Image 1 (cartoon, rainbow, N blue to C red):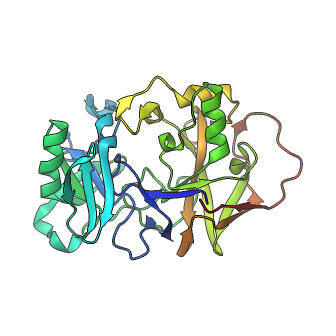
Image 2 (image 1 turned 90 degrees about the vertical axis):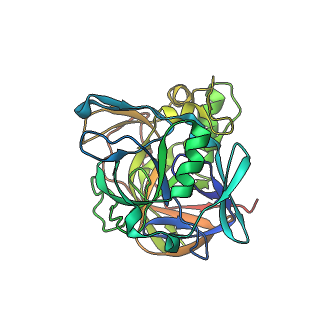
Length: 321
């Protein structure tokens, strides 16, 4: 494992960790105080169904409402760090604010929210709402995935009973550094794995081969590789500046010959980078740990170069930085 990071607030910057705990809901700090994707931002406006819709780094179209929900890449400027009291957020490295614990919230702060297909209740963190509204210069609310939150991991591609926070659809996103480097170098650019907003960064796998395996095993705990990660235009946002970049990694994926996944649910064709993991247990991981890949996946509808005839089990060493 080359790197481990979590995003305490969806769309915000990463918190780097030397070690972490993987649970069925995703990563968290060893002491369990800071959870990956435990917070997210919603528009203060209600949609026609009476929910506060998710706000991300990109503009989302909602044809069913004949509405758009313009996001903002400036969410990337929310930077988390840890101090003796817990989690602190800054905006563009200034104006620090402490994040109150879940025990400081109550049910009267629950809001109706919509996060992709999920409709439910989330607890507003009002002091963060006021802080972020000021910095984004738009009326937003920051909510926490606790209390009445009851979202579950997608079972579209793998049956499971994993509770989920505000991740896109799966608890863990794993990316291979060599794949990232191929995409950026195809564009003549310096590799930036952060554009793909992973939780776990790996090295040692042959190019694109992570997609051929059925599961990863970390510390004896199985991680089902539910689906490849199809990429969106957020990868074109410079995560350090919160601005659209001239470097477009999606174009690099095409030039580097990355696989095209033909989605069985929509028939759409999309370039992929990294894998969505569903943990089947709980384990503590650290940079330098080894991940074992095993099993050939069932046909995945990948359109790319011919597959290898044999696929041995791989043991990927994650060197200490």
